[in-house]
Image: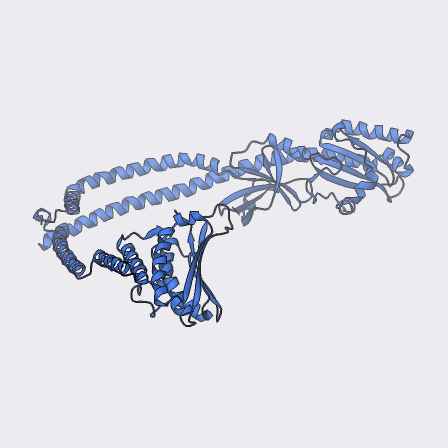
Amino acid sequence: MKKTHRAGSIQKRILVITVSCLLGMCAIISSVSYYLFRNYLQRSLIQGTETSLQLLSDTINGSMSDIYQMVRFCQTSRDVATYIENNPNPGSVLSVATYDRIAEEFNNNPSGGYMTRLAVITNAHFLQIVSASYSSTRNLSDEVPQLSFFNELLNCDDYNFSTGFIRDPFYRNGKNVLPVIRPITYKYNSVQGGFLFIEISSDLFTDALKRYATAEDSLVLLTLGEHHYIYENGTLIEIEAFYEPMKDLSSTAMIDGIGIHEIRNSQGAHRIVVTAPLEMPDCYISQIISHTELRNQQLLLWCIVGGVIISILGIGVLLMFMLNRMISVPVTKINDRMQRISTGDFARDTSIEWNHELGDIGRGINDLSENVYLLMNRRLEDEKQKKDLEYKMLQSQINPHFIYNTLNSIKWMATIQGAEGISEMTTALAKLLKSISKGTKLLVPIGEELSLLQDYFTIQSYRYGGTITMDIQVDDESIRELHIIKFTLQPLVENAIFHGIEPKGSGHITIHLYYEPSQEDDAVPTLRIDVTDDGVGMSREKAEQILCTNDEGSSDFFREIGVSNVQKRLQYEFGEEYGITVESVEGKYTTMSIHIPART
C-alpha cells in the first residue's frame, strides 16, 4: 500500500515538474525574445521618425526662411525707408512706386502664397499687398495698433509666435493666420518710423503635413509657444496638452537637436514622442510613434516565438501522452462518477477506489454521495412533517367563509327587526372579512382598497357613535385603476382615529389622492395619498418613531399591520425612494402621505 502511494506521489511530481519546465521555458524564451525584438523595433521606428521629422521641419523652415527674407527686405529697403520717412498720401507717386517695389519682391518670393496679407504701415497711412479674396478697405494704420498682441510682438527683440494661430481680424470668414509684426526704422537713424504687419496662412504648415505620411494611430503635433495643435483631416486643431512627460530619452537621438520622450496620454497609455525644433522661437513639430506599426512588426517576432513554443509543447504532449494511462484515465472515471451523482445516482461505485491517491479521492466521493443521499432523505422527511403541522394549524382555524355566512344571516335578521345600524355594521364587517379571505395577491386596485377602507370606517363610525367623519377626494378617476399593496390605507386611518381624534373626542379625516408633479419628463408618475386628521397632532420625534416601530395600541384585528409595517412593505415592493412621510403640528393636524409609482 505504501509503495503504491509513493508511486502516485511520483506521478504527481513528474506531471508538475514537466508542466512547470515547459511553461518556464516558454515564458523565458517569450520574454527575452519579446524584450530584445521590441527594443529593436522601437529603436528602428524612432530613428525613422527622426529622419522623417527632420525633413518635415526642413520644409517648414525653408518656407519660413523665405518669409524672413521678405521681412528683412522691408526692414532694409531704401524705398520702404523713404516711404516711411515721407509718409505720403495714398495714390501719390512715391506711394505707387514703393508699392510696386514691394509687390515685385513679394511676387518673386517662393513663399509669397503663404502670406495672406503684407502691410507696411506708418502712423497715418499704409501699403497693403493682399489677395483679392482677402482685400479690405479698413484702415490698418488705426486698427492694427489696437490688436491685443501688437505691443508684445512689436517690442520683442526677435520674432514672437506666442499668439498662435488667430482668425484673420480684417476678414470675417478668413482662415487661421499667424501674425508677424516687426518695426521699420527711418533711413538714416534707428528710430522707428513704422512697422511691418504680415499674416502667415496656416497652409504653410498643412501643405507640408499633407505630404507627410503617418500611420493611422500616429499623431503629428505643432507647438507654437503655449499653443498646441493636432493635425487631423488636413487642418490644425488647437488642443490642450493631453499627455504627461515620463522619461527623457533625448540622449539616444541620432540627429542633434531632436528630442525624444516617453509620455503617458490621458488614457494612461505610454507612448514615445519625437520632437524637432523649428527655426521659429519656441516652436516645435512633434510626432507620436505609431503603436500599429510596432504591433505589425511584432507579428514576425510572435511567429518565431510561436514556432519555438510549438516545438516545446510537442515534447510536452508526448510526455503527457505517456502519463495519460497513469493519471488521466482514473481522473476521467472519477469525473464520470461525479456526473452520475449530479443526475441523482448516489449508489456506491467501488471501481474508482484504487490503491493510490486518486483512489482516496474516489472513496471520498463515494462517502460523500452516501451522506448526501441520507441528508436528502432526512430533509424530505422533515418537509413532510412540516406540511402535516401546517395542515393541522389550518384545521384549527375558523373558516372565514363560515363567519361571512353567519354575519350575513345576522344582517337579514337585523333588517327584518328594523335595526338598520346593526344591519349596516354587520354588512360592513362581512364585506371586510370577505375581502380578507378573497385571495392572497399582494397588489389590488386602489378602488378596491378604498372600498375596504369604507367598510372599516363604517364599523369605526358606529363604534365612536358618529363623532368621527371621513371623506375621500380623488382628483383623477384613472387613479382608481392604479394598484397598491393590500391593507395600506387602513393602518393609517386607524392611526388617525386612535392617536389623533380619539384623545380629542371627535374629528374629521380626509383622504386625498392625486398625482405629484414630476421633475423629469420621462420619469415614472408618482401617486400621492394624503391621510389628514384634525386631531391632537404629534411631535417631530413621535412622527419619526411611528415609522420605525409597530404600534402596540393597534386593534387586535389588524395588530400585525402597523404604520411601520406598511412603510417596510412599500419600500420592499417599490424601492427606498418611495414610502410614507409624516407632517404634523401639535394641537392642529397630522398628515401621513403615501408616495408610490403610478402603476396599473
